[in-house]
Length: 264
Picture 1 (cartoon, rainbow, N blue to C red):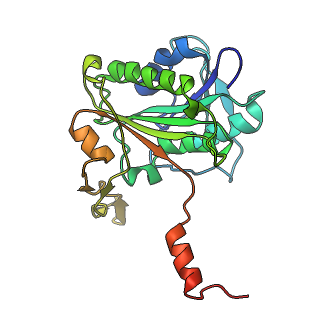
Picture 2 (picture 1 turned 180 degrees about the horizontal axis):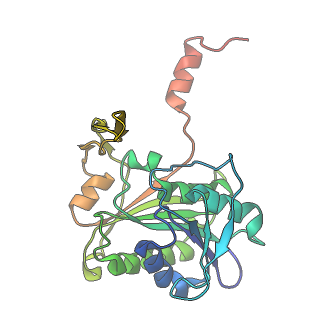
Protein backbone atom coordinates (compact mmCIF):
# COMPACT_ATOMS: atom_id res chain seq x y z
CA UNK A 1 0.00 0.00 0.00
CA UNK A 2 1.12 3.58 -0.59
CA UNK A 3 3.15 5.17 2.20
CA UNK A 4 0.78 8.13 2.24
CA UNK A 5 -2.95 8.31 1.79
CA UNK A 6 -4.22 5.11 0.10
CA UNK A 7 -5.63 5.46 -3.39
CA UNK A 8 -9.00 3.72 -3.79
CA UNK A 9 -10.52 3.04 -7.21
CA UNK A 10 -14.32 2.77 -7.11
CA UNK A 11 -16.53 1.24 -9.80
CA UNK A 12 -19.86 -0.58 -10.09
CA UNK A 13 -22.17 -2.27 -12.58
CA UNK A 14 -25.39 -0.26 -12.06
CA UNK A 15 -23.89 2.77 -13.78
CA UNK A 16 -22.36 6.02 -12.57
CA UNK A 17 -25.77 7.52 -11.71
CA UNK A 18 -26.69 4.69 -9.33
CA UNK A 19 -27.44 5.71 -5.73
CA UNK A 20 -25.36 2.80 -4.45
CA UNK A 21 -22.20 4.12 -6.08
CA UNK A 22 -22.67 7.65 -4.72
CA UNK A 23 -23.38 6.36 -1.22
CA UNK A 24 -20.27 4.15 -1.28
CA UNK A 25 -18.03 6.95 -2.53
CA UNK A 26 -19.27 9.39 0.09
CA UNK A 27 -18.78 6.80 2.83
CA UNK A 28 -15.18 5.92 1.95
CA UNK A 29 -13.92 9.44 1.13
CA UNK A 30 -12.39 9.85 4.62
CA UNK A 31 -10.29 6.72 4.08
CA UNK A 32 -8.18 7.82 1.13
CA UNK A 33 -7.84 9.44 -2.25
CA UNK A 34 -10.79 8.39 -4.39
CA UNK A 35 -11.04 7.84 -8.14
CA UNK A 36 -14.41 6.85 -9.55
CA UNK A 37 -14.61 5.16 -12.96
CA UNK A 38 -17.98 3.53 -13.62
CA UNK A 39 -20.05 2.42 -16.61
CA UNK A 40 -22.20 4.97 -18.39
CA UNK A 41 -25.19 2.60 -18.26
CA UNK A 42 -26.36 -0.36 -16.24
CA UNK A 43 -24.34 -3.50 -16.97
CA UNK A 44 -25.79 -5.95 -14.45
CA UNK A 45 -24.95 -9.51 -15.42
CA UNK A 46 -22.02 -8.44 -17.59
CA UNK A 47 -19.60 -10.66 -15.67
CA UNK A 48 -15.95 -10.26 -16.75
CA UNK A 49 -16.69 -9.08 -20.28
CA UNK A 50 -14.39 -6.67 -22.12
CA UNK A 51 -15.50 -4.49 -25.02
CA UNK A 52 -13.31 -5.43 -28.01
CA UNK A 53 -15.58 -4.52 -30.94
CA UNK A 54 -15.37 -0.73 -30.62
CA UNK A 55 -13.28 1.97 -28.94
CA UNK A 56 -14.16 3.27 -25.50
CA UNK A 57 -14.60 6.87 -24.39
CA UNK A 58 -14.05 8.32 -20.93
CA UNK A 59 -16.02 11.36 -19.77
CA UNK A 60 -15.68 13.40 -16.59
CA UNK A 61 -18.71 14.65 -14.69
CA UNK A 62 -18.55 18.38 -14.02
CA UNK A 63 -20.67 19.80 -11.22
CA UNK A 64 -23.27 18.30 -8.93
CA UNK A 65 -22.87 15.63 -6.29
CA UNK A 66 -20.96 13.38 -8.73
CA UNK A 67 -18.46 16.06 -9.69
CA UNK A 68 -15.18 14.45 -10.69
CA UNK A 69 -16.63 11.01 -11.41
CA UNK A 70 -15.51 9.41 -14.66
CA UNK A 71 -17.76 7.18 -16.75
CA UNK A 72 -17.02 4.86 -19.67
CA UNK A 73 -19.29 3.58 -22.43
CA UNK A 74 -18.41 0.02 -21.52
CA UNK A 75 -18.58 -2.69 -18.88
CA UNK A 76 -17.41 -2.73 -15.25
CA UNK A 77 -14.38 -4.76 -16.32
CA UNK A 78 -13.62 -2.18 -19.01
CA UNK A 79 -13.61 0.53 -16.34
CA UNK A 80 -11.04 -1.15 -14.13
CA UNK A 81 -9.00 -2.51 -17.04
CA UNK A 82 -8.67 0.91 -18.69
CA UNK A 83 -7.81 2.47 -15.34
CA UNK A 84 -5.08 -0.09 -14.69
CA UNK A 85 -3.56 -0.11 -18.16
CA UNK A 86 -3.20 3.53 -19.02
CA UNK A 87 -5.71 5.96 -17.57
CA UNK A 88 -4.22 6.12 -14.07
CA UNK A 89 -0.59 7.16 -13.55
CA UNK A 90 -0.13 4.36 -11.03
CA UNK A 91 -2.08 1.39 -9.76
CA UNK A 92 -4.43 2.09 -6.86
CA UNK A 93 -4.05 0.42 -3.49
CA UNK A 94 -7.57 -1.01 -3.45
CA UNK A 95 -10.45 -1.54 -5.87
CA UNK A 96 -13.98 -1.47 -4.48
CA UNK A 97 -17.16 -2.07 -6.44
CA UNK A 98 -20.81 -1.39 -5.69
CA UNK A 99 -22.92 -0.99 -3.80
CA UNK A 100 -24.94 -3.26 -6.06
CA UNK A 101 -28.72 -3.14 -6.10
CA UNK A 102 -29.46 -6.74 -5.13
CA UNK A 103 -27.57 -9.67 -3.67
CA UNK A 104 -24.60 -11.45 -5.21
CA UNK A 105 -24.38 -14.79 -3.43
CA UNK A 106 -23.65 -18.35 -4.47
CA UNK A 107 -23.42 -18.74 -8.25
CA UNK A 108 -24.44 -15.09 -8.69
CA UNK A 109 -20.75 -14.18 -8.48
CA UNK A 110 -20.12 -15.85 -11.86
CA UNK A 111 -22.51 -13.43 -13.60
CA UNK A 112 -22.05 -10.32 -11.50
CA UNK A 113 -20.55 -7.20 -13.03
CA UNK A 114 -20.06 -5.88 -9.51
CA UNK A 115 -17.85 -8.82 -8.58
CA UNK A 116 -16.14 -8.67 -11.98
CA UNK A 117 -14.88 -5.13 -11.35
CA UNK A 118 -13.23 -6.28 -8.13
CA UNK A 119 -11.82 -9.35 -9.88
CA UNK A 120 -10.23 -7.18 -12.57
CA UNK A 121 -8.31 -5.32 -9.90
CA UNK A 122 -7.09 -8.59 -8.41
CA UNK A 123 -5.90 -9.72 -11.84
CA UNK A 124 -3.57 -6.71 -11.78
CA UNK A 125 -2.37 -7.51 -8.26
CA UNK A 126 -4.62 -5.03 -6.43
CA UNK A 127 -6.94 -6.22 -3.62
CA UNK A 128 -10.64 -5.96 -4.43
CA UNK A 129 -13.92 -5.83 -2.54
CA UNK A 130 -17.36 -6.21 -4.13
CA UNK A 131 -20.30 -4.81 -2.14
CA UNK A 132 -23.94 -5.75 -2.69
CA UNK A 133 -27.13 -4.93 -0.83
CA UNK A 134 -29.54 -7.85 -0.45
CA UNK A 135 -32.88 -6.31 -1.45
CA UNK A 136 -33.37 -4.15 -4.51
CA UNK A 137 -34.73 -0.61 -4.30
CA UNK A 138 -31.91 1.16 -2.39
CA UNK A 139 -33.70 0.94 0.95
CA UNK A 140 -31.20 1.72 3.75
CA UNK A 141 -28.42 2.36 1.22
CA UNK A 142 -26.71 4.95 3.45
CA UNK A 143 -26.65 2.41 6.29
CA UNK A 144 -25.12 -0.16 3.95
CA UNK A 145 -22.52 2.40 2.89
CA UNK A 146 -21.55 3.04 6.51
CA UNK A 147 -21.03 -0.71 6.95
CA UNK A 148 -18.98 -0.77 3.74
CA UNK A 149 -16.82 2.04 5.17
CA UNK A 150 -16.08 -0.11 8.22
CA UNK A 151 -15.09 -3.08 6.06
CA UNK A 152 -12.85 -0.98 3.80
CA UNK A 153 -11.20 0.53 6.88
CA UNK A 154 -10.60 -2.95 8.27
CA UNK A 155 -9.17 -4.06 4.92
CA UNK A 156 -6.77 -1.14 4.70
CA UNK A 157 -5.45 -1.76 8.20
CA UNK A 158 -5.15 -5.56 7.95
CA UNK A 159 -2.59 -7.84 6.36
CA UNK A 160 -5.26 -8.86 3.85
CA UNK A 161 -4.22 -5.73 2.03
CA UNK A 162 -0.89 -7.45 1.30
CA UNK A 163 -0.62 -10.19 -1.29
CA UNK A 164 -0.96 -13.72 0.07
CA UNK A 165 1.92 -16.18 0.11
CA UNK A 166 0.55 -17.52 -3.19
CA UNK A 167 1.14 -14.10 -4.74
CA UNK A 168 -2.55 -13.35 -5.21
CA UNK A 169 -4.24 -10.20 -4.00
CA UNK A 170 -7.21 -10.61 -1.67
CA UNK A 171 -10.71 -10.70 -3.15
CA UNK A 172 -13.75 -10.27 -0.91
CA UNK A 173 -17.42 -10.58 -1.83
CA UNK A 174 -19.59 -8.71 0.67
CA UNK A 175 -23.39 -8.85 0.98
CA UNK A 176 -25.16 -6.44 3.32
CA UNK A 177 -28.74 -6.79 4.62
CA UNK A 178 -31.11 -3.83 4.18
CA UNK A 179 -31.09 -2.94 7.88
CA UNK A 180 -30.32 0.07 10.06
CA UNK A 181 -26.62 0.63 10.64
CA UNK A 182 -26.81 -0.24 14.34
CA UNK A 183 -28.00 -3.72 13.31
CA UNK A 184 -25.08 -4.25 10.93
CA UNK A 185 -22.35 -4.82 13.51
CA UNK A 186 -22.27 -8.61 13.03
CA UNK A 187 -19.95 -9.85 10.28
CA UNK A 188 -19.50 -13.46 9.28
CA UNK A 189 -16.71 -14.85 7.14
CA UNK A 190 -18.47 -17.32 4.86
CA UNK A 191 -18.20 -19.66 1.90
CA UNK A 192 -20.41 -19.42 -1.15
CA UNK A 193 -23.67 -21.35 -0.93
CA UNK A 194 -25.40 -22.47 -4.09
CA UNK A 195 -28.70 -22.31 -5.89
CA UNK A 196 -30.89 -24.60 -7.92
CA UNK A 197 -30.85 -24.07 -11.67
CA UNK A 198 -32.20 -20.76 -12.94
CA UNK A 199 -35.90 -20.54 -13.60
CA UNK A 200 -37.10 -20.98 -17.22
CA UNK A 201 -36.91 -18.18 -19.74
CA UNK A 202 -40.04 -16.07 -20.16
CA UNK A 203 -41.30 -16.34 -23.74
CA UNK A 204 -43.33 -13.52 -25.33
CA UNK A 205 -44.37 -12.40 -28.79
CA UNK A 206 -42.81 -9.27 -30.27
CA UNK A 207 -45.01 -6.71 -32.13
CA UNK A 208 -43.87 -8.44 -35.32
CA UNK A 209 -45.07 -11.81 -34.10
CA UNK A 210 -41.58 -13.15 -33.39
CA UNK A 211 -40.72 -15.06 -30.24
CA UNK A 212 -38.62 -13.12 -27.75
CA UNK A 213 -36.99 -14.51 -24.65
CA UNK A 214 -36.32 -12.95 -21.26
CA UNK A 215 -33.75 -14.63 -19.02
CA UNK A 216 -35.55 -16.20 -16.07
CA UNK A 217 -35.04 -15.37 -12.43
CA UNK A 218 -32.18 -16.85 -10.43
CA UNK A 219 -32.78 -20.28 -8.99
CA UNK A 220 -33.99 -20.78 -5.45
CA UNK A 221 -31.43 -21.38 -2.72
CA UNK A 222 -30.18 -24.98 -2.59
CA UNK A 223 -27.46 -24.80 0.06
CA UNK A 224 -27.93 -22.29 2.86
CA UNK A 225 -26.30 -24.44 5.51
CA UNK A 226 -24.30 -22.95 8.37
CA UNK A 227 -21.16 -21.26 7.14
CA UNK A 228 -22.61 -20.13 3.81
CA UNK A 229 -23.32 -16.60 2.66
CA UNK A 230 -27.04 -17.42 2.46
CA UNK A 231 -27.07 -18.63 6.08
CA UNK A 232 -25.34 -15.49 7.34
CA UNK A 233 -27.81 -13.24 5.55
CA UNK A 234 -30.75 -15.29 6.84
CA UNK A 235 -29.38 -14.63 10.33
CA UNK A 236 -29.23 -10.87 9.72
CA UNK A 237 -25.43 -10.70 9.44
CA UNK A 238 -23.14 -9.20 6.84
CA UNK A 239 -21.57 -11.96 4.74
CA UNK A 240 -17.89 -11.61 3.77
CA UNK A 241 -16.65 -14.33 1.44
CA UNK A 242 -12.95 -14.57 0.50
CA UNK A 243 -12.64 -15.75 -3.10
CA UNK A 244 -9.88 -16.81 -5.48
CA UNK A 245 -9.40 -16.89 -9.24
CA UNK A 246 -7.92 -20.39 -9.54
CA UNK A 247 -10.64 -22.41 -11.31
CA UNK A 248 -8.55 -25.56 -11.62
CA UNK A 249 -10.18 -28.63 -10.02
CA UNK A 250 -7.00 -29.88 -8.39
CA UNK A 251 -8.45 -33.13 -7.03
CA UNK A 252 -9.83 -34.04 -10.45
CA UNK A 253 -6.56 -33.01 -12.07
CA UNK A 254 -4.68 -35.55 -9.93
CA UNK A 255 -7.32 -38.23 -10.54
CA UNK A 256 -7.21 -37.75 -14.32
CA UNK A 257 -3.44 -37.98 -14.35
CA UNK A 258 -3.62 -41.14 -12.26
CA UNK A 259 -6.11 -42.60 -14.76
CA UNK A 260 -3.73 -42.02 -17.66
CA UNK A 261 -5.51 -39.10 -19.31
CA UNK A 262 -2.20 -37.39 -20.05
CA UNK A 263 -0.45 -38.30 -23.31
CA UNK A 264 2.82 -37.33 -24.90
